[in-house]
Image (cartoon, rainbow over all chains, first blue to last red; front, top):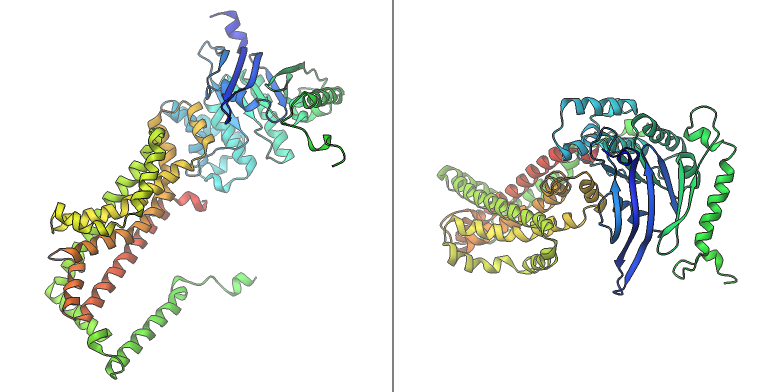
Length: 277
Length: 260
């Protein structure tokens, strides 16, 4: 077991990826990406639409194979092979399965579901306030409840890396802060590394140990900003937003994102930039 | 509350107007035949149909003919729907041929299956099996088109979820594709009840020794209109009962749709 395997959860080196556009030409989406994510680290990725965030996630989760470059997943703390789990804005619950059956789906697809798995799932769902809904169908749940079932399903597979693609953007503010706290808790309780893609700069700062700005066309890393917030007590989704440094990070990220808009890109001229029409 | 004042109509209350209308039409028909307004020999009459039904039950012909047609319809429906659904779903495994195959199934759907009747009778004889095959061919295309559509409409993100969770293809088929296709499969099945009945009855018209289609055909050529009506009524009841049964199974299996 190498020392690097224990501390680096994910290492991306010189990753480039493209696709063949309808006009038959190769279009590069990501160009020469280098990114390293430590065990138990939360990295937020922000960027404009089309910066290649979803492609990056599909590459990390193995849905796509990289054009060039390498993606290495580090081992888990115990030495077992690392495993990437993926969670989207859509909860992707199966409507014909009950809450408990949905939560167990990942385990079921990876092997046999044991009694202890069932007990684990029940305990986790109870902790998320879904104890009374174990046998309910997803149609009967609210958006926040459904997203918690999805999170339970994801976490029960015991991933070493959790990819979150705008998972909370459709939820109300209160539920959203609660789930953000849940995810931040995973880092400290279980040593899970989290990569969060979001359009919401505040969420990126509040949750991230680092915020990476992806921009340009093809997408590359424009900024990689460590976030240090002076919070009263343990950092959580609410007090992080009240930290004195929060606004400064916000300004800096906003400037970086606007900078990416000014990069030469004829395909994406914002309406406000067209004068006098 | 207004809801409490006017409770939801019961199944009986809901069907009462159509029932009364049917009684009225039958009474008017019988009266017209008895009073000589219409020719009972050319149009039949409700009383004549009842007599014909009594004779049919006493001799056992009505029962056995009904059983034979029901058997042909069910066997054809099962074969056609199973084969159609299976080929539609399995196309997911071979995306390369899925588009041409869908085109083929649409072409097949356009063929008037009944026109194949004489061919089927030549190939499979004038017994029960030619009716089963005609019913099966009549139902295959609808089942396949429906299953293909179910696969096509499947959420790509769900497929990706199954892939990132390391699902085998067989597990994707069993745990994702099949359950999400169930509503499509059942709607095709309900449509296909009618098509299977047409296939079986027309097969009996073309060449047969028994079955409701045979009975109707023979009675028609003898101008026994009451027996023709009787056959039509039994066929209609058969279709309604089969549809009700499929609906019942569907509601059991797709309980999740309506929530808890």
